[in-house]
Length: 333
Ligand SMILES: Cc1cc2nc3c(=O)[nH]c(=O)nc-3n(C[C@H](O)[C@H](O)[C@H](O)COP(=O)(O)OP(=O)(O)OC[C@H]3O[C@@H](n4cnc5c(N)ncnc54)[C@H](O)[C@@H]3O)c2cc1C
Image 1 (cartoon, protein in one colour):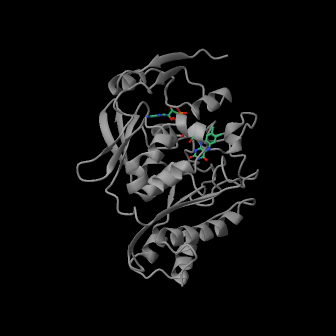
Image 2 (tube, rainbow, N blue to C red):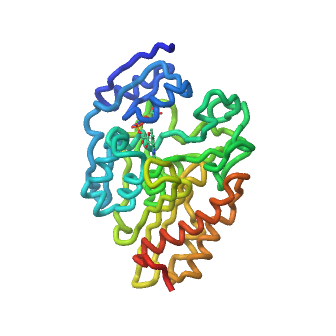
């Protein structure tokens, strides 16, 4: 059994200071970290409990419009907050699509951003090949069971996917992640926060060691009237996405003024479908254009032997999510 010390941080500076100690990690709701520790995947020496830091557990408005969601806001509180429900329903839907009510009551926004992949070869230490868990050891998923794995942006080192529903909505909404570290504060654009695996699949994000996430900022709400989060999964609840789509539109009548589309369950990070967004923007929303845009979104897909179904599933999910966002639940002409 490993010895672990526990320390409760009183403020951001204290948490950052404590995190400079060897083997220290932050603990939020613990819903991911404790599972990883129990499985022997994570072996921290010191737990820095950040849940008692004041000022990080609220949702507030920003001066120029937009909102700030503190890193310690529980997933259920974020999903049900009036500002989030009214101005960013896409985010509320994505949060409520994740995990279970009990887990959402514990899980924090900061922890959700940093939850690790659900690749079975990463979680099960009986498997000796996992570049994410043991850099340089190989990737058992490449020729193993890879039904849940990536079809976009993967590398020969790793085909794991990011499992967070919340992050898919935040990618579509162009959120900013605010962090505090030994060198002060900085802001990371959401598109730059999670990484593709490349030859360092053990590194999930661009967060530096010892940096604390303090908040997520959302720009002024442009998409509250036309957005939809669609999660396709094996069970109706309590299951990770096979494919998910966050679709957000600005509409002028039946014409799409601008579109944002992000995919979950397909890559090592939430995947923005920029080509599809450009094909839809400035056009009347027709079924033909939408299908072409969905095909463009998946044009670079490289499925493995068990997950080729995700390519068509993702295309169909894009069509359905965009239709729903536009208010054309029955499909467009
Ligand atoms: C059975 C089950 C089903 C689930 N289903 C889903 C699902 O369908 N969709 C989904 O999106 N998620 C799902 N989850 C995952 C769940 O959303 C995450 O476990 C949760 O969001 C993590 O938040 P936490 O606060 O508990 O993080 P913790 O477990 O406390 O921490 C996770 C990681 O983040 C770090 N960390 C935490 N807070 C900060 C911070 N402020 N700054 C820097 N680092 C920090 C920790 O050091 C740790 O490395 C599921 C989990 C379980 C157990």
